Length: 370
Image 1 (cartoon, rainbow, N blue to C red):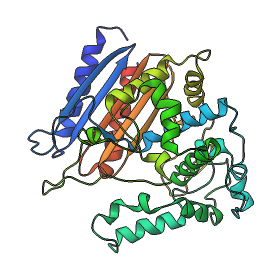
Image 2: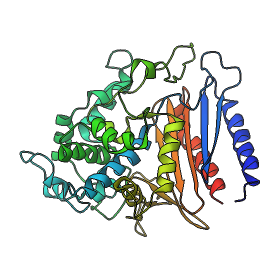
Image 3: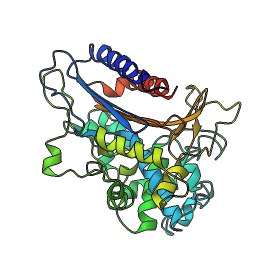
Image 4: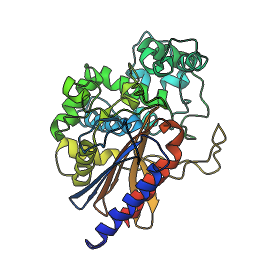
């Protein structure tokens, strides 16, 4: 792509974004593109918005499952330090007193990181908490607390009784419990809480001051909220043991810095640089003839560690989306083109809209990669 194409690219994406927001009351969307080191950021809100302020590059959003590629970067860092290996069975790192069946204990770290473990989406106890909230048996806002109420003891119990949806390594299912287990194992092998580990290994070296889970008073003032039909701010999601798979908050500026660091990563560079490259290698592709257990479409991408490899005419570009109840986010890296993307969105129907907006985000990214 020549430099003269960039203004047209950005203008086209901005037009798409404005059209998308035109039917989403009180929604906000910030899009960041980095093209060979040059940043282009567009911050928008729905026309006629009264509660939602216009966001900025340092407005903080929940980023949902984009957290996973931060966690797999931490994994690659700990691997480089000799604390863990991709082919380690998870039983070697979880507490010895757990009564894990062999088909669970033998799942490898790599299989957790590539969603090929055979574990389902969530554990039985976690699903029970979700169902309880959906039935309305919890107090107001109960729908938003199941991640917070789900503790490591619940995770251990779910692993002890887990059944596989397909034989390990022979299929693909997006697994919240799998990535949550991976994040918890990272805590155990490092001997420190996940957020401390993340900040020490990734955020501090890259200067990501606004990426994490715990917010200062000043950061809370920069948090973007969605607004319901009555004009009230929608609540945030809170996490416990499942934090590493989807609980982080960040800004477009921080996400672009992370994306740019991935683009600049050199196999001969720092440990962090090598770890970022390590996470963006192909480790798994869905076997031919595999049928998704829930009947959904078979993935059209290959798996890195957390990252998804999107095929386009010039090769693979790496991408991941994130969703919570009221937020959407994405991050993408194309080394060949020197292009990256970061997006954050807030809206009262974000969870329902995720497939539509994520498809648009991927289209913007791949358009920039041409």
